[in-house]
Length: 324
Image (cartoon, rainbow, N blue to C red; front, side, top):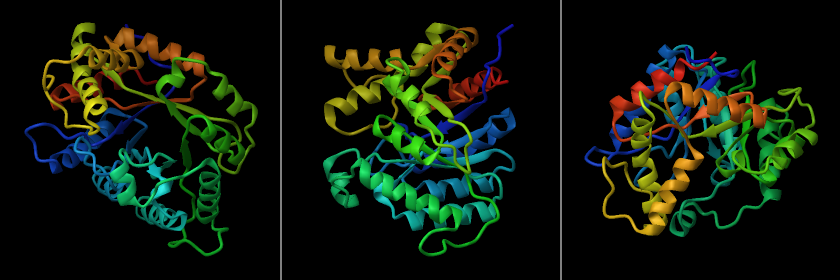
């Protein structure tokens, strides 16, 4: 019998488009997936913010959160995340307070500082530079507006403040520690030097929201009947990653690679697979438990995707069985 993980598991859905489908179908797929996630007992279901990216339909987290929350009843719904360079803190606070008023006790707010995917996207967004100092100011203002202590009152007023998470690497970890906020970390940080996470814990200042530091680890996870099948299900996302490096555009998911991959692209595919966790339920449980132990994480946020929606549903169901 597979051992369950020591921490809760949640899902991050990026509304991936698929070749041969209308892009809008990715959004209905996200809502359907959230309903299944609730039935499976997942803790949270988060959506993403990406602009002018052919492979991702989700450009407005608050709108998609509202749609998901309206079609579910209990699961927490949030953003992974809202990118502060693209929004004024007051507007973000008002959007989240409105969602909290409509769905009390179910809304999370994850924020980050990533800019647009390409230079034209950044220009269209009106953001060409955004340093750590600006992020600190915007994050502080956002906290104040959410707490009702800002320079003006973000409406509507709500009795409880939705929890705030920081999608962080490098300097973002220090900002989160100073503000007493939980962090969501992923990518190479989970496989390499963990000194930044220790620095976050050492520098953490308790806040009204968090008395202690909290780390959520986010990565691609795929569970299947065999290790080979899990690897094959991971490939559409890996192919898209390789294509984006070559063409500068993140494409829809495909059931097969668009063309013969170059040696460099094959390397990108293998790097993507290396940073992900995939295999049988037993293998995934063992590897995730090891990552939780190494990072001291309090939660796993799985950003699984693949071309076959049926296989994705089966993978979600299998992963849910590993949760405590």
